[in-house]
Length: 462
Image 1 (tube, rainbow, N blue to C red):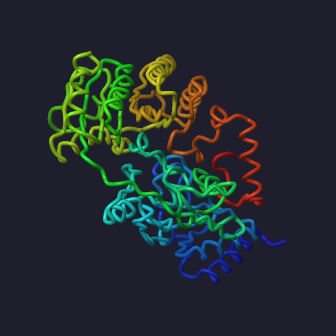
Image 2 (spheres, rainbow, N blue to C red):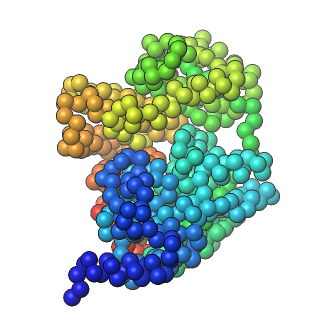
């Protein structure tokens, strides 16, 4: 029997002979491939393969499946759940060379793109063609479309346009055994049995590797207004959501920030906050529609006490300054030791959940610091604990905090992951949101499409 070291050597030689310079080994592998934005358990994989074509992806998977070698797909490494973190015995496959917008169909309002293309590139191509790709978030310049689809990425435009899943018409996917599935449908109506593309959207690379996609495009924005409001309580935010929709405004973003988040973010910026920090709730909204409709809605909200104060951006620069308050999350890794929770809850219960979670965590960890914000129009709450506020910021303490929060999410019939996925970081808590029968079906699907378990093993569920 040959040793594992010898087996690795022989396998890597075969891999090199087949794919040549696309294969990086040892010190050649950049550290950026060791972990995602969480920095969780960084690890150098056995090899990194930088595939430039679908056929190269298929050849790699065929070989790895034959030799029972684990494969970890990697995109822009901007994920927040550890889904792209490799292991020492795995072959990481980077899609960063599989790039390019292949075409834009102006008649059908679709765009065909390769998986390694960045979100920013897709947005720019859509704009150049007179459209827009409406999925957007801060990592746009680095994240890749294949990763966006594999994790069903969200962002602040979900309230109007839906998740990434809602933008995908067709896919090309390579299965674990190297077969290439051509699901590149470009039509909105195509009702021909099982819509297999949905098996791979949000599956985090555990069922197949996405190599190409057909995406839906949206019309360009019309007259858009950005404004910030100070509110007396959470119910007022829900009431304002209904009021703005009832005024005929199309909401592109509806971002609610609790006082703890707003005060912290404004403290990180120069100058005076646009609104005083005394309000319990703050709303940052981007709405499309007639200015007169917005002004009338805000006047009514101010008169009723639903809104206590408001500021309307008068220019693109002012709008960016308001958004900078909300986008303080990009500074969390630098200024906090964040324990991030990305959860979904019924809209009506989000305010109560924030209060219950704060009481629960404070009772057990009295000095704990918590900040909250959310895209509440699409049920999404982001709760962040600053590990620096804990007497002992250990792995055990973090796991205990996660267990408490996710248990409470289950009690509220919520989801432990709104838009970041499961990966490694949430798999132990998946049972709070997915019933045993559904988990059994998920495992059966995994075994059917990947019987040797080579695709992203250990992710989603162990």
